[in-house]
Length: 346
Image 1 (tube, rainbow, N blue to C red):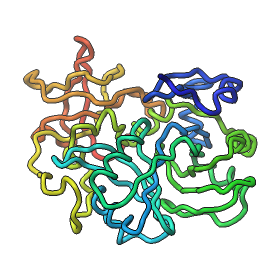
Image 2 (cartoon, rainbow, N blue to C red):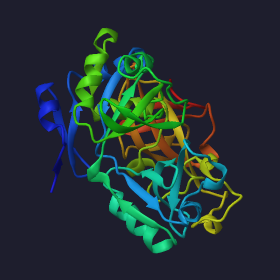
Image 3 (cartoon, rainbow, N blue to C red):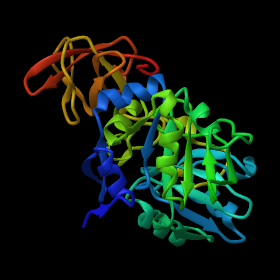
């Protein structure tokens, strides 16, 4: 059964077109994906991402629990920090990627949509601490773009958190967690709150800066331009090493899956910039440009509104995963020439 967004009526009044995503009916776009994408890159946009999970880890052994179930070492983090990490199975495969916040007496995890119950069960089964799914108690709004700070300062004039930090404060009459995080590659803030009115108040605050309400379509194209992984596309069934995300691993502590990780992998995740006109899509084969050998597959693909070109992420054989290598993507029989790049597209 699909769960309707808490702010469905407000989104509908703003002209949203909806889509089903991980069991939630959420805005796909309001005006157009490209218009919303460019608003975030150039000014400011606002997303309702309340479909994301919220799981608390509590108890006297909460730090021990987080150390065991994630690839990060929470003992190195102080109150107010936000950490991007991963939860692995015993075989070193990714169950989910997520951020967590180091609170005074507990941790707040934000797993991907639809993952709350699995993460809650996994932590409670595999660790000494206690995980509690409170996803339905809170909303999450994401204010993103170079003018996000100016927009927020019209509502909140106190000190704002630095990048990958958060504060617990009162905002518009509600206790709210404000973190300087996001999934767009731009500066911005995420608000974890019970205040249903905050979304519209942020839109009003950002009017003079050209703010746009943004849907999941722009969120996906924005993260792809910055080579950010989507859990269901790039990560499931893979290891952090295959996904070129070894930097999320703190090797100095013990965690579930550590002993199964191996740097000798067969495939690596790479960014692919199209040189021909066309749009690569999930599942398209990637082939060697010289001998037509199938060397991989596209995991995420789309059109870059900034570059006005097709871009993709995909797994290719390790020997082929070299920046500058030319390949082609088989788009249902049409060869699209592409080049493996280093870094992000934008």
